[in-house]
Amino acid sequence: MTNTLPARGGEEIISKNIEDIYNRNYDMIYRVGFSYLKNAEDTKDVVSEIFLKLLQKNINFESAEYEKAWLLRTTINLCKDFLKNWRRKNVNIDDYTNLEGDDPFQQDETLKVILNLPDKYKNVIYLYYYEGYNSEEIAKMLKKPHSTIRYHLQEARKLLKGVLEDEK
Image (cartoon, rainbow, N blue to C red; front, side):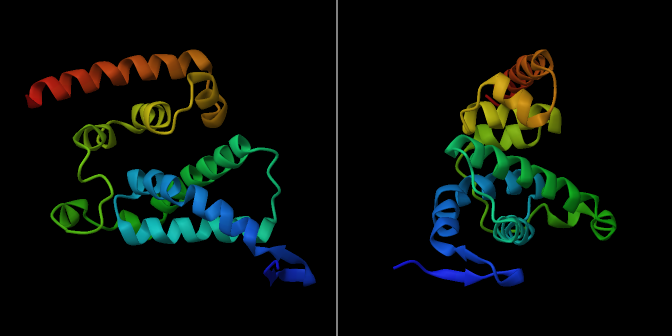
């Protein structure tokens, strides 16, 4: 028995497929979103918007890799758009430094350091080490030359090494 949800224009979308995609990718999308937004509630909003887009567009993915790449690219773009919002520019980030919340990165000190790197380094390091993409795949996803991605990985490793050695 397949559950279906009515969509705009009278089309039907098989909710089981969306549910499977959600179950497979929610944690990854949430981690990537949180790395940008640093706020659990905003991250949940972005994750909801991603799955709403998926429902509305009724996308059939060619493979699991294409599905993951689309979700990552959409997550990154929505987070960047969210951060550009004028209302967010009027908030003082220092007001949020000591808030307690459901931070998924509390146990991983290395990931905390990675999240404090500049975006160009943070993105490639995270995608390479935490999501398992190689540098060519990252270059395609971020629409940058392969050599740039390799350089960013090299520079990020140097930065990480310096920061982690200083902490010891």
